[in-house]
Image (cartoon, rainbow, N blue to C red; front, side, top):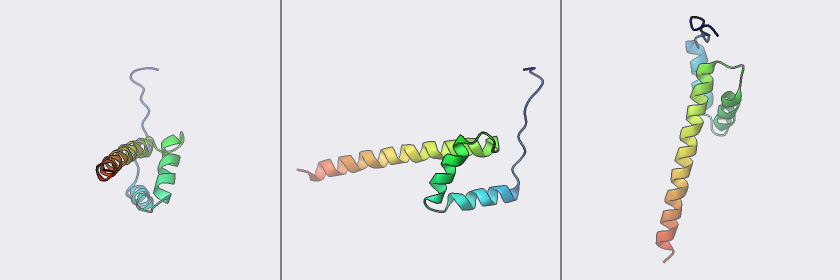
Length: 78
């Protein structure tokens, strides 16, 4: 590919972001949609990257919560 040739994604409009954020605050639906957006090859690359980053943070937080839960259970086991 020529270095001068770049692919530009369509800018997501204000309305697109409003709908995206609305969907992201609905429990259960948000996780399903994050997965759908993260694996989509046809969606806007900005939303794809945002969904992937959000899922990564979600996985990190779940891991931390599990670790804290194990530590707390270990403290009360004795």
